[in-house]
Length: 204
Ligand code: URA
Ligand code: SF4
Image (tube, rainbow, N blue to C red; front, top):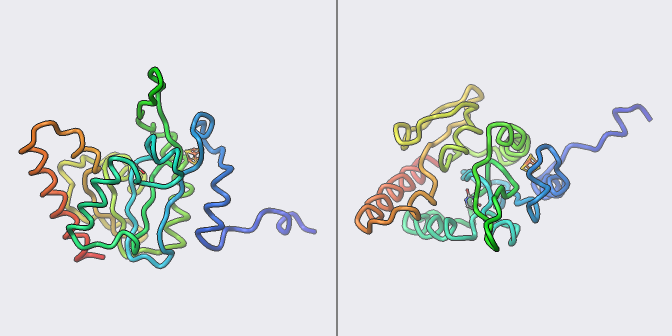
């Protein structure tokens, strides 16, 4: 056969793409992580939520947003009357990056090269799901989706239209809420995130 017949066919749906991503070696992050944590949700979803990268619990479970940040995310989606089962949820980077500290694994930020390498998968998810709206949860997701660093606190709540027409809604990462110690500040930030999610519901 001609060489073109020998190469692996392009994944035609999300389950095929998820299968391919299990063996990804596009950056070094696969080495220390447990598994690829791929996106989840219906292929005909109107909206895709993009986080940063799986955390400790996601790495073990193989599913996005199931740990503490996922709990915050779920509860605010619920308050905004967005059904998580009807949206597609994924991450900019699909392997957990961490530093070992004793028995614990401490989250470490993916760098620009890792974000760029893993964008390969996010682009394919966008192609297959074809959402009306993408929500960038925090700086890493925004950087991956927009191809440059954007100031989240300044841009939050804005919709940015990419050259390909895709609309990107920028907001904070739910783990930002988790890290706030002061109770009043935490409640205020939760409320702002809820307002953002209500806007998302209108836009999707
Ligand atoms: N934080 C993320 O960005 N993604 C997850 O899946 C979990 C925590
Ligand atoms: Fe591949 Fe992304 Fe994992 Fe890097 S982080 S190995 S690009 S799936």
